[in-house]
Image (cartoon, rainbow, N blue to C red; front, side):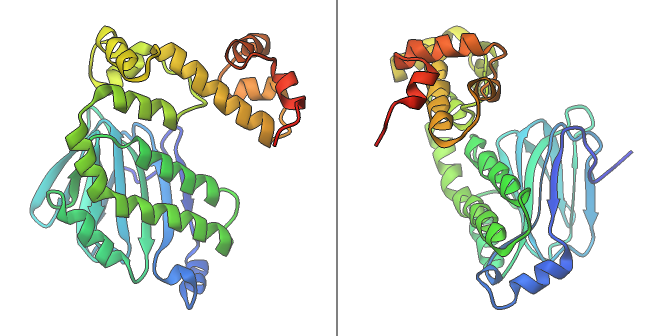
Length: 288
């Protein structure tokens, strides 16, 4: 059974067509405006066919799994670390692999700049598929687009969301070169943790993501940062905790929960071990 949406855990936002037409006329959104955006995790059965194409640029970032994209008679395989860029008015189809379905972050956008941006992004790849290796920063930007659009469909929100999405397209050629040239698993691990400061990731999970053994990752990570993976992650999460203590009215228990700590007392002990004072004392201390 093929489907275009309705996957467990998906996020999806579509701008109503009358609103997008209204906003794109004579505004800052006329050059580039997101019209659709989503995140489909392990999208089994995902498939779309558009024999006449669409007026938007379509950008899809594959973070895991496998799939394919076809233009005309030519088909390309898609795997983790690939970005698919389909130019406006290009007939196409795409779908998830039957046994290892892809996880995608994606968006569509219209505007006077989309043709040029599509050409620039595709010039560095093979047809519509651009392999960049490390996609964490791009998926984080698309998550930010979804976060903004979840607030409302105002012009201000669309400007912010469209700016982030445009940056994704503009970064594809550079990100590809950097991803292929670096190949440093420890640096990729650091970037992955920095992109997810509120999530606990085990050493084994992180090693699997950057494709080396846990022991090799620990050695290379310590060489790069001077800390173990666990130490670095705790410090990164406590830095995020300090940001939440400074910038929100959330309770300490709520902050602990946001950072993945089931026990707020354990969270407080971790915070004290890194910051030298309790979360409550940190929040009450004058700053600035």
